[in-house]
Image (tube, rainbow, N blue to C red):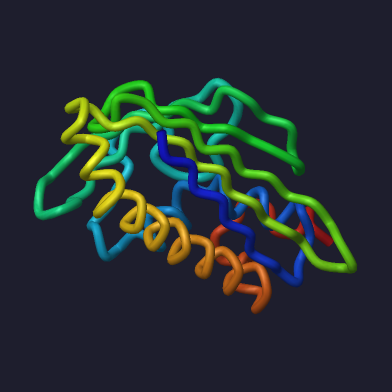
Length: 163
């Protein structure tokens, strides 16, 4: 089972980074390359504990659907989304936010299992792990950009509450 660990340093607050990470709208913008869109469940705004979203996207040239649910939620420190239905056998994605030396350390821990037994393991090793690392890194770069340049005010509802 592959596990991807990513850390992104962001000059912002944990609250802003957390909410950008939980924003359906920012996720849609950050995944334009795969034509990802929310089609059921929470389809805009910020997803919260116990809520789910179904995504439709094109990966590897194939139109796919994936439903995830938030199963842990401790704003602004941590949330977890887990696959309910989709192409993976299973996955969990932990999003962690800590403040260190005046900046946010945003940590992703993405653990996944692919179907297809040994073929899935070969696919993970040579294709999927790197593909997912790039996918998550691109998303994190957009979160960083929006958090640092003030564009978060364009996507987060009630932006004035962040002070």
